[in-house]
Image (tube, rainbow, N blue to C red):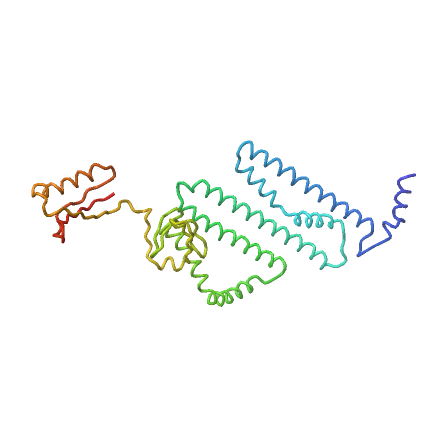
Length: 320
């Protein structure tokens, strides 16, 4: 059978004559084949890239390879599905412009969401890697980077939302203006929450204390365990966790013991009235010698202070 005969038979067949929504059955079958093939290729590529990147990351401890593996794992199934459907639809000709526009808008929206997911994963990976490197040497920068990471991810998702709305034809400028007016009302209704939020920024930027510092707030004291957006948590010496509101914490008097370079110690001792005069005059020198014999101590003074009810009182002051 010649090629012309095959072509005529194909033209007269149901595959070409039967139409649905402006496309023949043959076109729908080709579109379905492209969809299945694209989905298979994309899933296969995802598996290969993830496996290869994980192997390199484990063998060479490569941060780039680890990042590629995490980003590949963050590629969502719905992204692969929608992109495959979009690729398959390219062989179809829809009778209505709205249908074509709808397909394109869905594809762009899904792509923007997936890019936001990838960006979120990359920001989290970068922040976590920085925190692991600096935790022992610069805890203050770790606290700051945690806050920067949160606001960076928040900004990335906000930008993605605006791009999606703009792609759907929403007037973004009018929406932003409306959100600004609504934001004032929300701010008035959530003053305490926003107060704690800005207080956390003050803690991060001003650094009155950092993770690991031992601080005292009023009658409570403990090691700083977590600095969050609303609360700061301490671990007390007796073991329980103390939770403070950030705004209340900054309004309190905080004593940071970790930044204390030396501690002043003052004590008194008493000797009986029957002690000989020569022994009394030797007491300040004996105290000085006892304190100076220890490392990391600095003697300040030792002298007779007062007459007690049953003893002569001497006072001594030194620094550790």
